[in-house]
Image (cartoon, rainbow, N blue to C red; front, side):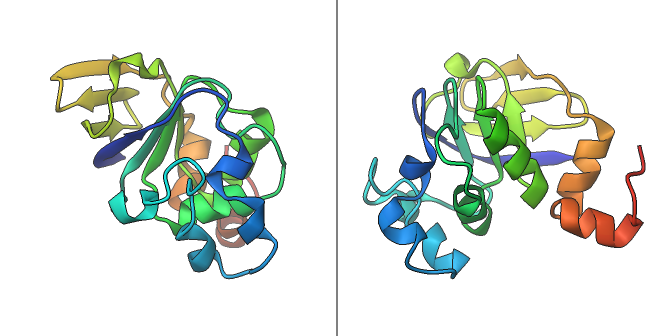
Length: 165
């Protein structure tokens, strides 16, 4: 599985309220509407800079805060290609996999804003085309790649009826 996109870089401790502000997440169930407001409190024009397949790159503890799924769903509906971080809040990671988001843990110090990246999930590597460097990542287990490819755990279970590990 190969993904290509541009990086949008954030720092440490990006909480779920930064991903989607509380002023939106309780006013609508329209995930496309929520997606148009991601990261608005950090960068009011963020959604205008985002292209389908782009990557969110962050430091430690991405997705800390609330366990509500609006944050991961808003990112999915914004068509984020992957989220690359040094570490994820545990419940955010699980929620992300559940809805089919690609989440990768690695050292993000070698990625800058607007770098063009190619991610090889199967072989565990990011190629930073802008800086011409390879960044190793821990490959995702096959069963997680299958869940992501099916669009999340619900779709996976609808198709396979059980875990095929």
